[in-house]
Image (cartoon, rainbow, N blue to C red):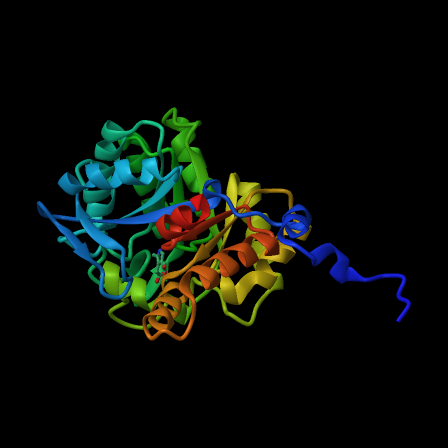
Length: 323
Ligand code: PBG
C-alpha cells in the first residue's frame, strides 16, 4: 500500500514512544490516604484495603519517614475514633484522633503536606455525614459543624482541609471561619462531585462509617447525573474552593473531563477503595498483572484531566515509577 499517513511510524520503538507520550505519571501526582486509630503500638493491616494499615499515633513516625523517602508529597488523613455520639464531637475535639495525628506528622516532617478529610460519618453514632433532625440530615446545622471541624484541623496544623460531606454551602462556611480565625493560608480541596457510590464499601468497613439507617442519597450525587456535577463544581469555586474533586474516579472519568473542559481549577480524582479492592482481588487470583494495570489506570485518570490522584496504590506506584 502507498499510504500518506502511517500512525505506526511513531510507535516503532521505545524511544519514539517515550517522546510521543502525552500523559506522564509522576510521584507528584499522588495523595496517599492514612487511617489513624486510638490505642498504642498498632499497625494493623486493613482487611478490605489490602496493604494499607490502621496506625495508632505513636506508630506514625516510621510510616511518615518511609512515605517522604519515596517522594510522596501529600497525605490525606482519616480518623477512626473510639467514641461516637450524635454530634460527632470527637471530630472537632482539640485532642481528637486526627488533631493528634496532624501534630505528630508535623513533628516528624514539616514539609509533607497534610490534608484532612473533614466529615462526621466516622464520628457520629448514626453514621451519617451531618446532624440528624427528624430522620433527615439537616444541611445548615451540619455545615456549621463541618466548618468547626475544619477549623480544629487548621489549628492542629493541617495544610489543607477536604470536606467530604456534600452539604450545600459548606465551602463558604469553612472559608469564612478559617479566614476570621487567621487561617487564610489553609486551602480547601472540595469533594465537589461526590457520588452516592457502591465503590465506597471497603472504606466503610475500614472506617466503621456505614450509616445505621437509610443511605447517603439525600446528600451525595446520583450516578446518572453529569450536568449536576458542573453545577456543584461551579458553586464550590464561587464559595472559595482551591481544588475540586471527582469521586469515585474510574467510573466517572467523563465527569473529570467535562470539568476540565469547563473550568480552570486544579482537579483531584479519588481512586476509591472499591476500585482498589477489585484490582487487588484480581491480582491475588493471578488474573491481572497488578503493576501494569495500576500504572495504566492511574495514567488514564490523568489523561481524563485529573491533576492529582488520591490513591491507595501511591506507595506501590511511587516504587514502580522509580524503576
Ligand atoms: C466519608 C468518606 C467516604 C470516603 C471518603 N470519605 C465514605 C462515604 O462517603 O461513605 C470513601 C473513600 C473510599 O471509598 O476510598 N464521607
